[in-house]
Image (tube, rainbow, N blue to C red; front, side, top):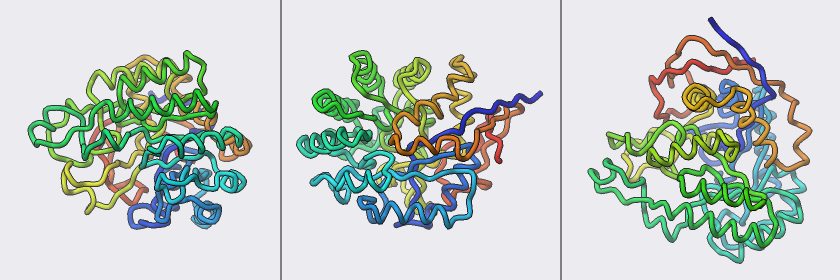
Length: 367
């Protein structure tokens, strides 16, 4: 027996399409096709393209590529850099980027470590009423780490990424949020301690949101057994306690969903944890994974699960884009027999996926 539900169109506020820069890993067309297949009706691209999306012209380039792609059923919105070139040294022309339609500001892939630069950016973003999204990994704490502490890390003698790498970054940004009043969104949160900082900030009444990724909700570093970089991402997989707290936070409404869809060529992911690129693809499996984790395993209602894919994400997108909310229609899901993940059928051009062969009952319906 199959059951179907239809909801307002799902939104993924965190995707990486590699155009311009690395179209062999993902083009705008292939990324949008993957989004449609995954049930997403709106996606927001990250600015860590080559060159970095720090100008209205580069924003227009991405939108023109979407219009020329021929893919229907999903709207592409663009985020824009916080700093020029994503170098963390000088605030970008946020006013011009806002005028050009930036969904929000982020240097995703890099942390804006300079306190004064970040404070200036947040004050200007506050005046524009646009959210600042932060990749919360402090480089001073990172120290070349590639994995959280776990059996595999010790077996392979890999450098560790500490919890403090995330929490130090979040604490600094919460302090600036408190000082400036700017709306702040913490991207791909991964630790129980980080979740507690966000919980406390929300209880305090600060304008703070955060997102959880399917991989952090499903997988843990405790279960890693091989030097397989398809399980390497930034921030890294947490332990079982982190995963449990992330799930609780989604169920409590503290966190929304996003994918951090990060395509890479095979050559950049076949070197093991030590030197391979960070990131995995996720657009085409995010709905099945989050449904299993949160509805089937954690008892979240289907309605509340869906809202974490559409209602909460729209809250962080620049208000000028809200009129697009229903432009591409709804997202329909079908719950029935288990189907295995077959990456050979993906619309994405990349195959850096840790979910091969896993089986899920809930899948989006295309169209």
